[in-house]
Each structure stands twice: as structure tokens, then as C-alpha cells.
Length: 203
Image (cartoon, rainbow, N blue to C red; front, side, top):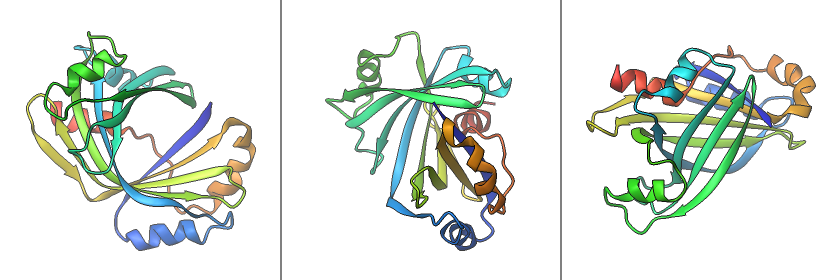
């Protein structure tokens, strides 16, 4: 169980945002090379996961297929079932080696461990940067160049004017978070890429 706290930031100056992390007293350093993150989200026909988020349900879930790198290189991905209980969350992973990157990969993903009642709703893609505090207790990610697509109608939109900063830490480190947050010049927000994408593309 861990906390994942988000900050949606207007991209006035990306360099300033990155420097605020690198100059933080917790001595954040780049932890991993930047890479593209791709997701296909699944939901019930009545969008139960979407409305759980919009309504702020204290116990909710989100289901996606995730892979990294070129968007067309979908073969080496995994299913993530992301569950949230109040402010704490955890993930369940199911590896799904696909045989094809054609349209029937949706069927293969479902065969890999998802109920067939679920449908693919939207996809999204973004570039992610990774940072880790010197003590290894806090991880920061910064997502940029967000692109969304409606999986049903093939409509595409973007959020190039926004960065999503996320700080992730184990539940036992909550007492130190106030100290970490004190030096972040951003306002914490409620934000879900899935909810944002469905709102943009389907409503």
C-alpha cells in the first residue's frame, strides 16, 4: 500500500519544474531514463470505474493494459488492476505476452486475465521522467506530452499545456511527506488521466 499524490501543473516553464525537483533538500536524482508510457483502459459498458473516480468513491479501481516505448510495439505489456482504498493504493499485475499488434490484441488482453464484460474505452500516451530521493523513500514522476484517443471512434486529443507531477511513497513514510511537500512550489490536486481522457473524448 502506498500514497500517490498528484500535482497538475501548467507548463509555463518545464525547466523550472524539473529544477525544483533536482534542487529539493531531499536530494532527488534522476532514477531512470525518460520513456514513453502507453495505456489502454478498460471499463464496464456503463463506465463504472470512471464514475467511481468522478464521484470520489473512497474504494475504487482502474484497469489498464500498459506497455513502454513505441506505441505500436504493444506486444510486451501487462495488465494493471489499480485499487484505491481512501488515499492508499496498490496494484495487481498480470503479464500478457501478445502474439500480434493488430486489432485482435484486445481479445488477447482479455484472454490474459480480464473479464470479457469489460470494453476498451480510451488509450493514452505520455513521456515520463523519474526521480528518486537520496534515502530512496520518495519517488517523483513528471509526465508531459499527454495524448488521448477514443478507442471506439478513433478521436485523438492532447494536453500539451499541462504536466502531471506525482510523488509516491510507502504508507510508513507519511510523517515525512509534510517535510517533502514544504519545498514543492505546487498545489496538490485531484487528477486522473483516465477520468480526464474519458471526459475529453466521450463527453
